[in-house]
Image (cartoon, rainbow, N blue to C red; front, top):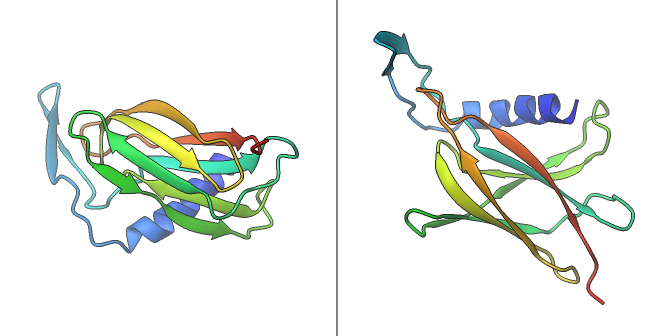
Amino acid sequence: MFLAAMRLALTLIIGTTALTGCEEASQSGLVTKCIKEGKTGLIVRVENAANRAPLSDATVTATALATGSTETFETLEVTSHSLDQAGPVYWGLIEKKGAHTIQVTKAGFISQSFEIFLDHDGCHVIPQSHLVSLTESP
């Protein structure tokens, strides 16, 4: 339920973003027409490990392992009653395939990092989502 709602919300945001996708891709000798839209590569929800409450004001940063380039994720405040928990989600890596280190930080909490690999389906990045539980600093 969480993933479906997030994909819908981010599709609405990304659908209005002026990005260009590929026009054609060749897979197995077939020509595929691709939609010209940018797909969000990663959606992150951040929660308090002690009580599972959503955490606002976190910072999610991605670093591409191949180039060292960094990106700070955007925040979307989710208020839909159809979600298990309302609260912020952090999204980024639009059409950025490859290996990335993700760093999640928030004042008063112990930071976490993890690595992901975003694959590509011939037209667009294949989206992923992650839940990160941060522990309060002692």
